[in-house]
Length: 595
Image (cartoon, rainbow, N blue to C red; front, side, top):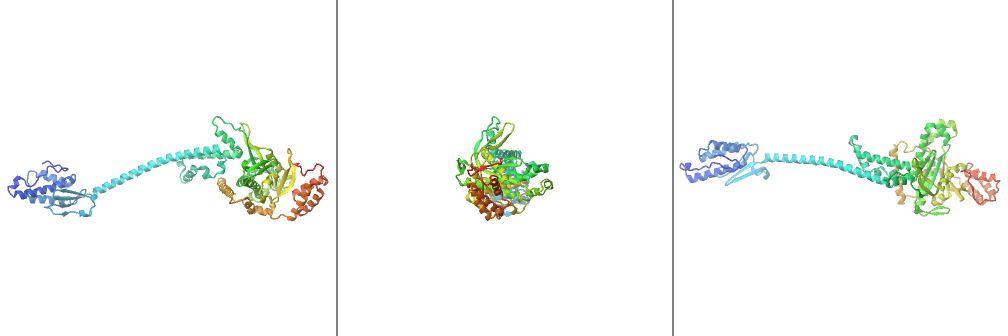
């Protein structure tokens, strides 16, 4: 009979009519039917293994015979024995009326449901060990999972690449927008602030090879560099030029209308610069830039800005908001604590610059250069400083071929003339009366009134003040940032500036605290002779009131206590020129002869 291993069809049944003639037909037919059921139960689940092949072969070879019950039992046992070691679907259990429970290799009770196959046909039960197949299935599932993980990882990497590129592009647009709104932001922000996504990617790329960096990162870094160069080149005065042209897509027009601002203007000049330039030749650039670094960094620390470098001269400023001042005929008057703080910071910045050029080792080294000593035997680096406050027009000066962003007003000129007058009075710093009136009460205690003058081109009288300082009391020391790389130095200072500004706004610090805690200022002010100050004040009051003979006597007594005081010498000489006789036109001030 043909045999179908999947359906069990064609299985010969024991107990045919021929065998009924030799044995009891009813008993044998019933037993034979049960044995046929046993083989039928086994057949569908052993289709490919040896069990099925052996049974099919036996049936084909003996299909012309009718088996007895004993022969069938022998056949059943033989099949069970042959499948004990079956590697793929081993038979582990057989139970039936004629076979009894037979266990091979493994107790089916120890197998989980997923590890065995049970086949039941009538009264017969066969159990097969399904573990080899489940192992294969598990391995295939693991392989499938691993493949999916790899596929997802590759997709995530590709998506991440696109995401980083998109984030970089968005960050680039953010920087361009910031540049078109406030170019100075790039100079006043730290690296984390002004680089955004580029900053974080840059740190990551420091651990990667150069070839792995994204082109968008280079583009963003390039735009940031250009923005910083624009901010450094144009400064605060040129920010409006950059904003105007970046927001105008039609054509380039660097000549934009000016804008009125109020600020504390500072003008400072390196004395004897022409002589040192002749001596130093190519080294003069190093000389000038080291002094400029000291000036610029100090002004920046105290929330100011640098506008122009004109050879040996520097124009500096501290802007004041319109809402913080009130304009009067005699000049701007502070209306808020912010304006007072700005004036205090401007004065403190100048005092710190004077201290630094007289104590920093790398600055003082120029005083000992053989080339300079040969030309100027008693050379010592000196600078003059003028400080004034008022309005000015901020804008671009020049043409489409070349422009300079600067400030134009009589107040800027006054700051320049005050600096020039420092030589006449023999002092490093002159402060205008308008700045003095804006200072806090604590800062005013450091100032001494030395004259009342009118500058050329002005009909208004101008009080002049100085701060008494003894720079010889300072101790030479190294600059703590001297050996720090310039980019890192800038980053450190920006973070400190940001924290300092926040402390001032939240009133965790005040100008009084800054003045009182400054060690350099304390050293330079320690040796002031109070007897001299009393004689000078008495003589100065007599000078202003027109009692010049008494003023001359007081000044002579003051010079005994402090022979080198410049203002006392200057006023004494002026009165001596007039033979101590007050001019008939005297109104309590004189013309400033130094332009």
